Image (cartoon, rainbow, N blue to C red):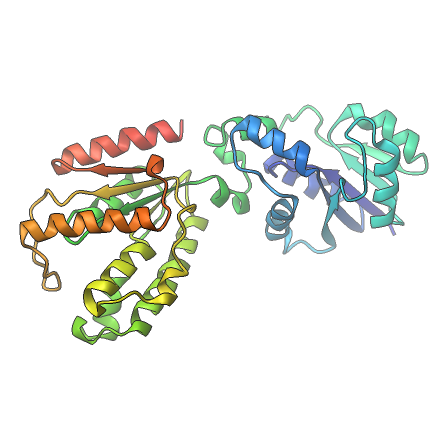
Length: 344
């Protein structure tokens, strides 16, 4: 039985990695993909590329998702710091011992670097070292390039990893401020996914449109269903994903309808989730759609200020928040320019 190992950082895993892994799989009966992690060193690489830290566990998870339907492939995680392995190139001996402890009976080592040949032959003299696509002829990309500009190399990032890199844009505001329409327009312009506000649909489906019957459980369910829908939208995102409302808005309406906070809703509030929070000003014409009831101009601005305070009180970063007003055309142009600058 031919058993192969394919070690690497996969920081992040890309289509070059994936193609090489699948080619290696054709040469053995069982393939172990080993994700090496060094939190300190990998953290420096991520900071240099100006991306959030990508843990080894997350990289393993992404590869598991991508390769789950390929038989006889197993993804393993090697935390090099836990094994006290010195940084490359000084840790060959300890690294080799760790590899043997993870997969004792392998025959072949697969890799994409010619420079690892000598070390492999020295510390694995009984194993064959097979180089796959060292010149990156099929997919001319590297983890370094992706970390430096994930949006330029978006098509090279494996699908499971894309939600991590996608910019998450929240469009929020009080009723009849234009957020739902502009969210849809932005998603269509950027050819990406968006998550619609569920509260209105929930009211029609489960309350028959009679919002006087709202209960704590209803708002908790809205927050949960919104969270799940947001997750699905993010999984399909193309560089950027738009969210029409969040749990702060759900909490905001719970206070309006019930007069108090709903504790279950607060659990879904996550200030760190979004890269940008766009708060739409209520300076456009109020439109009565049969469900809205807060159309008086002074009241609209009071509620607008109240919503902003809720975001601040829940720990949202003011550096990631911005108010947008003006005509519909002015709003759209302003937001388009802002997002363009984020995904260059």
